[in-house]
Length: 423
Image 1 (cartoon, helix red, strand yellow):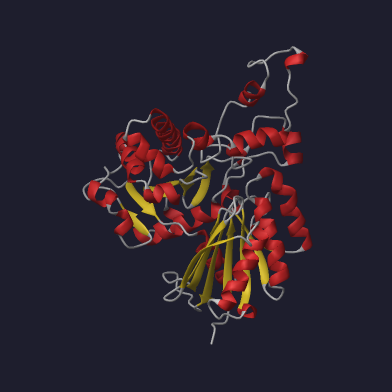
Image 2 (spheres, one colour):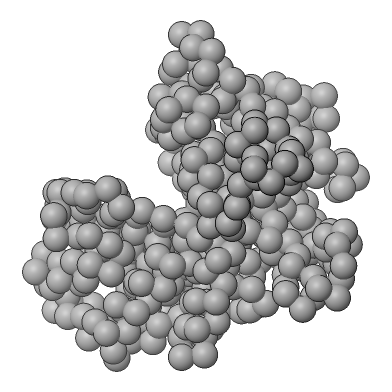
């Protein structure tokens, strides 16, 4: 018989959809998870068909195929729902809750049950997270149609950063306009940071509220977070996910005037109306969100390929890699100062943070001057083959400032919060 009390977590990216299905365990022990993984699915290349579809039941069947029927996020989710019945013999009526990762939640501080009001609020915020909120809404809409008896709950990446004080979250602009239009730093990757904070707390055997961490979520979308006493003090992303660190196709922080110089017909700022360009918000966001980052510097979004090319002295790859390291160090140094040097650990996470031994080694080397443990070469190289959610890559000797890698899991974090919160 298929398990009952199932919780489904959906994580929509700009061209991908990751889904995990869990069974509740009933555990209330903080050291044990309240949910157990049943199956996972991943759909990629949604915006560049044919989409790649993977489906794996824990301890059972695995499916890996290209699907011409998947054209968008809605059809991707519908394809998954069809598979859980045919491939895993699971009755969709046993799914009691569906957790949706929503990148931008505006002023929502907690997860919310999806209603017409919540749906339209998220819809209005789509302009602030153009690569993600629209995809999440498409999945939510399909979910409401396909799983009408399940409770759909939105979990917001911005919620973790609600503790950021006003003098850090505010911009130096007219505050009347700023407050009226919600123009402030929101921060993102909050579900990942929440998972990392809890996992590192377990690993170090220290209470969450005692921890000071600098966390690097490094992936196609990259950010850094400064955590003081278990709460977000600062983070690199801002009003939108565009600010801060560069990513696969994002520019990261730039001089705000750059976009006008970039698009000007004269190749420079000019008061000549004949040289002026009508620059629309959508055009600027397309350039900075989708036509920048490593792709613009190297022609690829694959950071592993960039690293391999750098090893062969490819100048474009070297520029991209070194530029990324430089921007990361800017935040590590700044956050170290904000924490008064009292840091329990620097934590690497995200696809690049978890897999790039080269990046970890170089950053680790550069921050030894701040009192961090040196990188242990053997530990660092062996991360992929080391079990556990958190892996220590620092030398066993010395510092109280640890160097850790955390395998983050946003889907598990949503399912856990959903179950523990009894939503």
